[in-house]
Length: 289
Length: 343
Image (tube, rainbow over all chains, first blue to last red; front, side):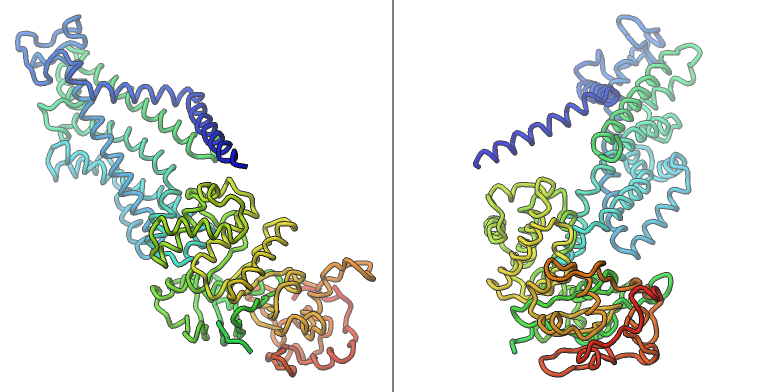
């Protein structure tokens, strides 16, 4: 009977293969994953791929149309738009990633606590309702004008804006888990509330939270672009997709490339992330298939 | 008489609901001796599970439940303990097995991890010690190849295996009292027998008290030494398993016993059933609670509240005013079964 272990190993391997297979069969998810991966790759390798520095100005080469030397043209100060978009990808990806991460951690924490402690639930959920009542972009603008423009502040204010929804999702998942017999069983075994919450409930609500985090990631990229476009996001000389758009809007009739390329990159990244999120949801949530 | 490990005096558990306060358990008193198995029987909705969960105080006392009475465990009243002290009792001194073994294990952890948990919480063992103990426990509950099983997840085990794992978790800290809430309901008959045998042998081996909650009287007859019959949140009859089965005094107990299908001997054409259903908690009848369904009901039954009375020797107690009559001669039923159903 010793080969039971081997059988189990084989089964596990098959299970993993099935999961991978399922993911690759989902064409949209693969497309989304590829786009996201390429964007991350471009962002990481920006210093290697970029033909020049993001702040290098060649004043004589102002507003040149796309050419072999400048694939996406140059901007009002003679900076290479392609370079700036690559470096902008770093900013966007970093903001998206950290906002997703912070929102996930904080939202999960609040949602779990709210699902367990009734009084805290009332307090936290009313605060979330309050934050939800204000359109998130406006709220983010308000936070940015209070905090001042910098990448860290963009991350902070976007996180604050997206935490309420994440907390709600985590809470509703946690309430379902809390009603399960196994939670009752561990409390009958003498586990403390915090032990129950963090060890037994948290792993069981991970999948909806991860899926939501991928949407938060995408949303953060759009909102960052919007904030920068409005001039309250990432401060100006730094490249970000929103900043390039912001500078391009004054010369929109003369230099279409300053608008089109960053917009395409933003749209493509968000598209990819959303598809990836949908794929994750199909994979992680056994109820939808 | 052996030492009493648990003594419940006048326990009442009420729930605050939208429709008012519901008293699911109303003045229940019983005790469990060291090393004995007490059967707690009754139909669904009689308050068996609520009683058992009240012993561990598993209901949320802040918002929903309220306990009254005393629960003396080892001479200490559990209802006076703080939440922290109560946690030290749960899973350590008193353990519980739930009826639904299939969903009582957390799907994201291995079986071994979940058996180790009470050991890590209560006995502060190191991980290696706890793992070793988990393997021992799995052997104790009769799971083959425990070294392999500890690494498996609940979904990889069958229902019977999972119930064994639940028992292993419950026994991890060698509790003095085990509450088994319908431990075999979700399992098929052969596995049921194995699990009951296991509980019986562990009860002997570890000499712990067991409260066995079930609606299966045949299980009670085979395993328990004493039985308490519950109806609508009250104990209606209590006694040794022989007294209950050989000379049931309360009409409800009689009804329950008559409802068991007989395998041998003469059989009635149709299986007996107690007319009607257990009333809802907000429709508790006045007088004797069983009166609306009782075949021996008199008009006096509906007027007077019945106390639990000692019938004589050996702590046999009955909550029925006609018990003496019903015991001596076969009193004629006042009405045929099913004539006046409902409340």
